[in-house]
Length: 271
Image (cartoon, rainbow, N blue to C red; front, side, top):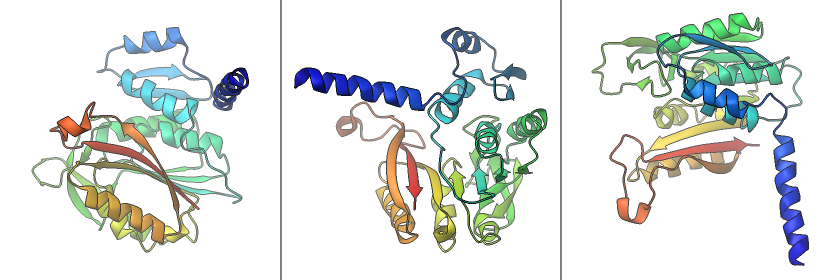
């Protein structure tokens, strides 16, 4: 019995490993070389299925593994031309994945950060992807101009204090969603703005078949997480949650990180 359980466990690991080999993996040497690159200049690397222009190599390693090795955005659709909306496209790794994995899809990618958008634009052009529509805009609860913390990294975000001198154009995501009868995949990684945006989109979420939400919050904002989960539940979506970042080693002792986000979760919502 013990030997059988061990063999079953090994088999399960092997099957899991095999299932995540659809795309080129970064080799041990390739990862080492990437880690030793600077994070100031624009660089280019061929990943087999596509060419990528980037600045921050450590962000590329982490994001590539999530998106192409683990395929966290993989979904099934019976639509002839799946509609995919990528909110917080960054330099375009997620957009590239959607376009390559679902070549008949229509992908709408939103990224307001000036530096990131230029890289996103160059990556779509370098790979000659004709099914991608780029929007240099933030997604928000209204059409407006917002203050924006323009960091050129994954930490770029809407500045709700209004103190940032950088301004970006924002569109109401709910109004954009209303243009579609069905959305096959909605990805939302917008660094803390998701609570307000999801609340504003609650009447449109029923048409969304698959919804990836990266939640950012503090340990004393449990009510926000509960409200978000209630919204997706009412939209007819089931939920599976993974840690996006494990920030507290001893939560019962530490309670809070002292940073803007104690809690970072990957929330997978699907019909």
